[in-house]
Image (cartoon, rainbow, N blue to C red; front, side, top):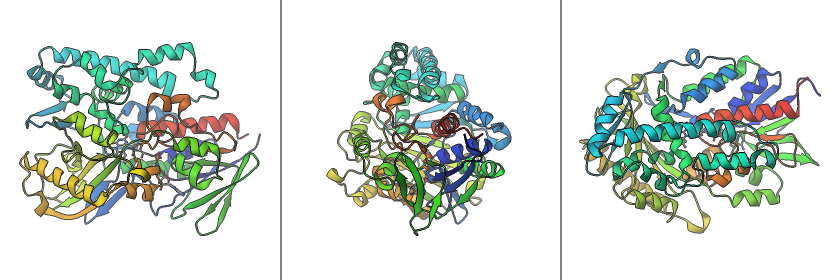
Length: 497
Ligand SMILES: Cc1cc2nc3c(=O)[nH]c(=O)nc-3n(C[C@H](O)[C@H](O)[C@H](O)COP(=O)(O)OP(=O)(O)OC[C@H]3O[C@@H](n4cnc5c(N)ncnc54)[C@H](O)[C@@H]3O)c2cc1C
């Protein structure tokens, strides 16, 4: 047992920050090394000409997990952020130009569902109740716990739980038990895309996503999602953690069963008792550690989709848009199969538009608008290289054409500037393997729980992982949990006094 053990954390994403807080709070001497000149990774921020953009995460989803993790940090999440109420959860737009508003008001939702399919509201409530139960079981049995050996995961009881939470059923199949109307089937399954997968090829367990949205609602932290990063850095610093930016790690030096030190791109070195890699796990195995069989195995995992993202600073406002807008197409299956099966992009893709000024006017100069568009696309694949500049053009035009149909005819003329991110940009900006920015490791049932790459290296017993590509998975709430679980594992393996 050692005192004041030193921990080097590679990366200042949410996973690294969560681990930094839990460990520094317990007296570990934490230093965070980030490759970029600013923190946050996929929860980063860019400000240009008074327009503020969240680079990745925009939806404050699953508030109960934020509350739980912050409370374990000894904090009340309500004291940490100023939450702005949102008029609606999101607006969905369909090909027949109809809209479905996911409102906080049950009456508004009931009226819209019943208009499409008689009896559907009652069934939606049942779907939400069941989906939320899946989340509660999933958190307790699968997500919010460390697995130290396979027999903690592979038990008869867990097998029964996996069947109970419909781990064995496809979401696209399961939804048909509740709704016949294709718009309703889409409205309650598109959320799979949040974790980079298709409802046609993923487990009905993920009905927990729309269920949680409806059950728990959503809010928006003033200043944007990046505010979470800023706050977490303040908390970690208050416990003594030290942050270093523009310090890309190029190697983790190992000896026998220990990770000895990290070497930076400029040749300098840092020695610590423990290392937590928040950088994408497959990248760390492949690029930072000595070659091993496990890296090859991890490379064979299924990876999530990627995204083309446009950030637009606009010189006028577009009140037609809500804060969160999802544009879906009638040929939903084909649009998703194009990405997930055919490794291409439909010329009429589904996409998401974020317009933060609807709740937070500080995101743009007065009388102007700030808009981000996320178009899911396949991840990078060397064997199946795509012409990304061409796909970017197709995606951009498809977005502009679709927006015209809701009366936004002149957007192109009002773009003051555009920032775009392609899969290769995600790969180079945060080192996420194959630009698979929603994972990177996919969340199929055999890549979750004990089957997901573990948060401790099998051989190097002082090397840990925290972030979306290890246990329990991707999305800020799960990544917050990941940092917490990794810290718990370190406390168990290497107690500090
Ligand atoms: C377009 C998009 C939309 C999203 N929307 C949502 C949403 O609405 N809600 C939600 O909850 N989640 C959302 N997510 C997911 C969420 O952003 C991620 O789950 C989360 O930010 C990942 O955090 P992380 O710590 O795992 O990884 P990262 O944020 O990638 O952090 C890893 C850090 O490690 C650094 N790093 C990498 N290599 C090195 C190196 N060699 N040396 C030093 N540092 C290194 C990186 O620069 C990065 O800062 C979205 C993601 C994307 C891309």
